[in-house]
Image 1 (cartoon, rainbow, N blue to C red):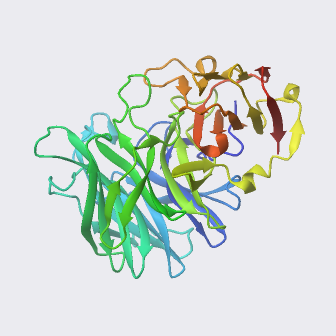
Image 2 (tube, rainbow, N blue to C red):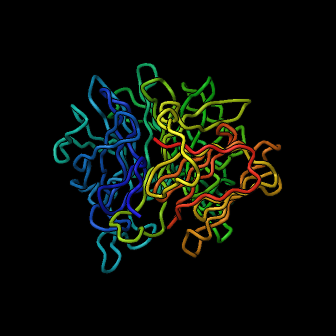
Image 3 (cartoon, rainbow, N blue to C red):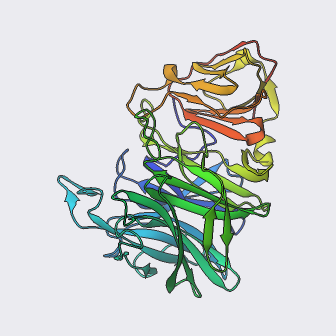
Length: 444
């Protein structure tokens, strides 16, 4: 199948969460969780790539790797900020209590390690002294009523006035409940080095640990994006998934209130651990990890990043749309009969209630006022890896912008009110349509 052409993949082997996503000195920097030795999860490093346009990426040497006692077993996810022209990376440092037998790259179990928070500074965004420039900034949490020694991670840091704020994902047990409750912890700092616990927000109905929390302001509202563990229990799809909601947040006190129900960020349920930044035009842009259960035939890499998505608030809801500067690249219209799975396309289509659109074995139809996608013909039959997905109700409007690349299809529904993105294996070079109102196929 080959690699996707406009979706970031690792040079080789395993990739997962996007990290340190930022526009810095005229380029987008995207770091990522990386295991450089195999196509499976292991001791986490930070891979590093840059781009001028969020489409074409250039890889650089590994940015972060274990060198300290506190991070000897991995540099987990984190964020980046710019301070006095330098790039500051914040990350979660991992130290195992005990290894899994026969594999030093994996802990003995889900609770046999400790997590602390650390940082490193680069003067140019390309060179990182992993031996001299790391600092431990928040030690493991030992107060079980506050958070978890093992499962507190993924710092997102931002500047507020003359100080810094941080949100961390964690979990704890309430006194009247034996099950864990997912939570966000807030810390503040005057200098980015010494941090003080400030506040927390939790909810026992949204999974049992909140990974990769990202809190930001857009169009005058605060939005929380996070990836709760064990939020799905249908034995069909991934148990961990990404959600979003509009929240109330006080920057002074770090008090956050969940005022809206959480919604799945991507109803295809493959996307996970997204992170946002401001692009060069001031748009809030999100990129997420697209999970792959298997490598493509003959390939030595696994996992890819989604296309960037611009976030806006419309009608008191959050929309995710492809950036206009990426849309403009697709300016050559071609016939449906010219479709070739080895190329990259944007397909614009308006459907009605009887429409069927089949993209090389990936079927899109309308059922009960929802978009339904079926990848059964182009996806392995595996437990907890869903093959049929259904959007929220659409009130009779079915306008689709579909991006097709090697191994991935991303469907933006009704200007980005909903998105369904799916990993696919072995698409055929054909498009079949039934009762479609309008359809246009564009390539770069």
